Image 1 (cartoon, helix red, strand yellow):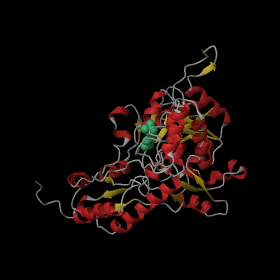
Image 2 (cartoon, rainbow, N blue to C red):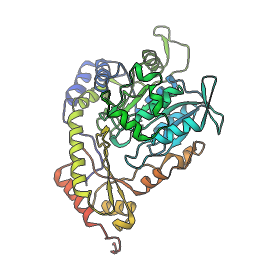
Image 3 (cartoon, rainbow, N blue to C red):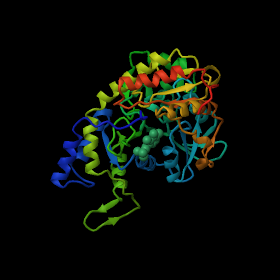
Image 4 (cartoon, rainbow, N blue to C red):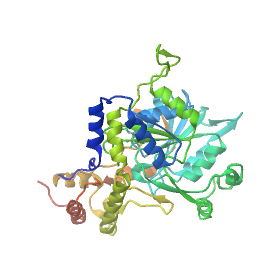
Length: 423
Ligand SMILES: *Cc1c(COP(=O)(O)O)cnc(C)c1O
C-alpha cells in the first residue's frame, strides 16, 4: 500500500515527548508550547504567535480578533478544504466564494479585486456588498497545496477598503511569495495604480528592486497554520495564529484560554474558548519544526520527479509553480483530461486503488457545498473544472523512489486503457 500523505517522525519527537512525561508537564502550559510558538514565529518572520488545538480553531479566533461580526461577509477561496468557510459561519458571518485562477489553482486575485471594486459600495468608511447590503469585513485567501496565492493585488485592494486579510496558510507552511515592498511610500497611493489593474502591471512592479521573498503567513494582517497529521509537519493535531499586531495577539491568547480575566477568582468578562494546545503536542511540533526545511526539500524532489515523468503524458497536467512563488508541493496534484488521457480522474482513482496506490481528488468547491448553501458566489467554473479533473498523488516525505516509480509507471501505463474490461 502506497499512502497519500503520512507523517514522518525522524527527529527529536520521542526525546521531547519523553521530557514532557518525565517532568509531568503534559497539559496546556509548558515550555514546549512557548518553544513551538517561538519556532513558528521565527520561521515565518512574524512578531506574535498563539498556539491552538487545531487549524480550524485558529481560523475561528483569527476571524474574531479581526473584528468579523454576525452578518458580515467574508471572501474566501471556493477551491479549498471546508474549514475556513465553517469558521466564517462559527462567527455568524457569511462566506462569499471566489473562483480559482487556472494556472496555480489559487484564489483568483482579479476576481477578488473586481468584487471589492465593483461589487461593493464604500460608504462612511465601510464597505458593503451591493447585492446583499451586508458589510464586507475580511478576505481569507487559502494558500492551497503548498503554493501561495498571488497576494499583492489582494493586499492593495484590501488596504484601500479596510478589509482584513486573514491568510489560511494551513497547507503551505514554508512556502514563499515574491512580494513588493509595501513600505510607507507604497501604502499611501502609489499602489492604487494596480488596483483592479491588469496582472502585467503588478508583475512590472514585482520585478523592481523593491521585490523580496516573504513567507506565507507574514503577508496579511493575521494568518493561520495547521499541524494536523497530513500537513507537512504535524503535532498530532494543532494550529497556530500568527500576526504582527500585538493587540490582536493578546486578544487571541485571551480568547483561546476561556477569556480568563482573573486567574485566581475565575472571573471571565466574556465568552471564551478552550482552544489551547497541550505541551505534549507542542513537543511533537518542536521536533517536527526542526525538520521542516528537510521535508520541504523532500517534497520538492518528489514534485520534480513527478513533473519530469508525467509532464509530457498527454492528458496529464502537472502542478505548476509561479515565478513569484516558492511552493512546498505539500500534496502533489495532477489534472486528468478525459478526452486526451482516455480515462477520467475518478476512474484513474479507482484503478490506482486496485493497485493499492492511494490517491484523492481535491475538495468539492465550497460554492457547491450543501453545508454552505447560504453562502454567496459568482460562478466558479475554474474551481469546478479543477475539482472534476484533479487527483492528488502519494506525496509523503517518506515516499521511496521505487514507490514513486511504481505510481508513475501506472499513470503512464493506464493512458488509453479505459476500454479494457476490469474484473
Ligand atoms: C488542514 C486545513 C485546515 C485546518 O485543519 P485542522 O485539521 O483544523 O488543523 C484549514 N484550512 C485548510 C485549507 C486546511 O487544509
